[in-house]
Image: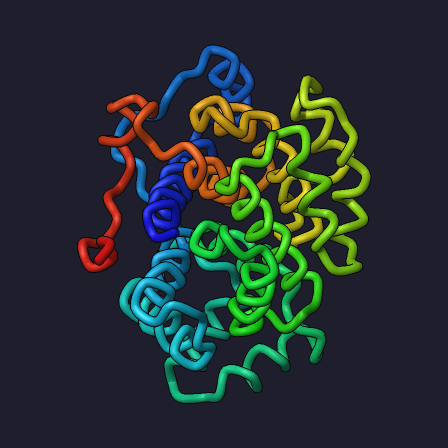
Length: 294
């Protein structure tokens, strides 16, 4: 589903850029500005969430599946071209080492005393993959795992990527919002990601997102378990309205660019971006011309 995958990438970039704007406001003003829906002035640059998602989308567009060696090279090259996209501390070392010629398996496997990273980086970039394989959920799950392993060796990071890809595939396929989380949970491997998702699977979608953030986290720990369940609940809450989904997600604070990137990728794969106000689209940094669909 190439069109859905590109829409997902665009929504991911919009969510990333919108979410990033909340880090540059006085803390005392954030609640008031969220309530009043005060947008930051343009431009809204995106971060490493989008830079990595562009690489993954291009990998699928050009090859039809994830080739791990090739994806590692793409991610390392993108980092070398522009390392100032707010990459996490461990990813600076990982992507620089891969770019310098070290085999990616060795680099990712030695992170955090050999445990690998369980950060949210694999999950934040994967939504377009879920949209691309929306007609085959099992393939989306398998390909998400492959995409995660290139930079994140820890099983929790892979579980986070699987959950986001599955959510996007199900959303694009037409699953209703109140059925989304159960569908994702059914294919997410046993993990803390799955455990926290289980906590909110039956929470009414009318709840305040801040309550959900308080229960399972909203990315303050920059981990997959602390990020993905909240983002998926927010996506389910507004599965047919991208703008409302992003406002709801931002209200939970935390790693706002990443939670909004995940939500943007899931919802936009389903809805496209035709209902997004022109002011939002013009404020968001454009995607690279090289990533246009073919």
